[in-house]
Image 1 (cartoon, rainbow, N blue to C red):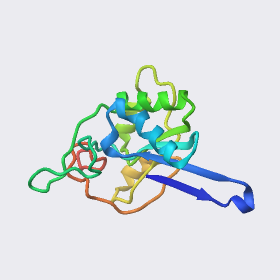
Image 2 (image 1 turned 120 degrees about the horizontal axis):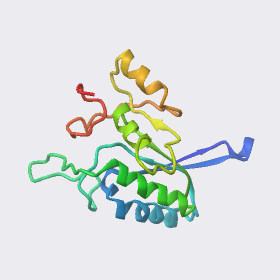
Image 3 (image 1 turned 180 degrees about the horizontal axis):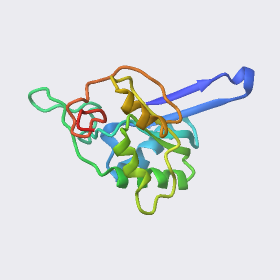
Image 4 (image 1 turned 120 degrees about the vertical axis):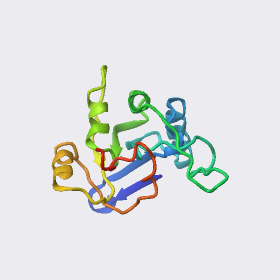
Length: 166
């Protein structure tokens, strides 16, 4: 997923944002995914590379992999190891900034407290969920760039960011 924001004629500003899709969360796929997108778009870098959500899906060609019963096929990937792969993309000059999307406070704190952290997430974009005032208070200090929209198909993933136990 690539987002292009532009009011270039008025400001000379053009912004490229790429989200790492959930089937590319294994560390060996993170940079390859970005490089592929950059080649297709004929760009040398993006301004922001985000982890789409903390809910990993089974790697492969299908963007929403399903089992034979039609259930989404989830996967498990260590968020800190995936974050290190994003840091390598920044070090390689493929992105100016890195961030996350739809992380709850525990998931975000896991990255922020990671030993050897090179770069903090610059933002945490958040889908629209029914959050309590306490949830919003916890997220408020961590969020820098919030866009709200409704999407709940990943609610059955064990790392879904807004389960009640969080």
